[in-house]
Length: 388
Image 1: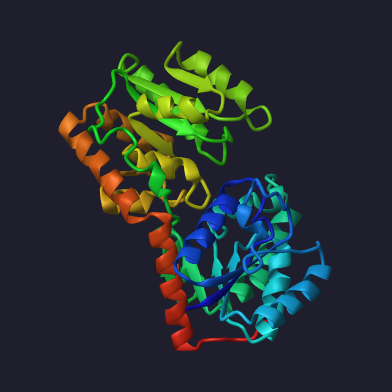
Image 2: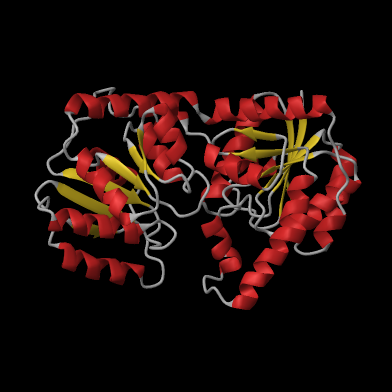
């Protein structure tokens, strides 16, 4: 049995990574591991009922006061290992120093924070002002890398992320993807999926044009229409807008042609079930991210992915045969989509079956168990360095 302390400032707030981290913790509880979680923002019981469990949660104050509270929690609970989620939150750097001073080994899960495109938008600043570029490089060199270099282990979620971590000269890496909710899997009475006419491609999630690669999708779709495929293809972009993104996308939809590019609001419940039913392929052209929730749910429905490496599904889709890996290039995406318009029903169903197989393999319970086993291997190695 391993006693684990999870450190993540945003554990109890809305969002993909907080939700996925809570799923990991819940899965680890099922393994019989003793857990403590340590968070700073949000304390809603509706967000996470485990908040009331005395062995599972601690709410702390913001800023430097949290260091004193962390020190007391380390003394009281005496964890075997600490799991830190993400690099992008500055207080995590100080928490890691406190953990290392207590002589407790820690693991960091990077969640896409090392990708070049992710670095560009770090700290919410998308303008590449020279002073900002220098500040980001300084932070990466003197804060990110020491945090990772002194970790007992680094969890990455994809082969792409492993390549990034290895290129920084880091070791003790283990690869475990984000999990998939078992109740999502195969919710269509196990009937084989059939292609629609027209072939329908979906992006579901925030309509962030740069982050989600929606400009590349629209570029490829425009090229398909110009090459005579307007009757064979439809793209749905569904989700909440980001700043003026909805207006921009609607303008592009008019230029491409009526009914070929649909811009929809976010969907939930039965509306989400319906959109899965009308979808043939999920477009995961993220420029940076961890393994997001929407493409995970698509895979669980047996929907093949067209995915970038940078979105952390590209390698998995290609290696496990449930989709196509594409570079972040509109022309190459166009060629991929054009080829899929001619894919046979049987070949499509092979992709769909492989998607379901992947989803059944990487449920959150399985992922949580794999991560706990990785902790145990690292503890057996006895690797520890003090940070700070």
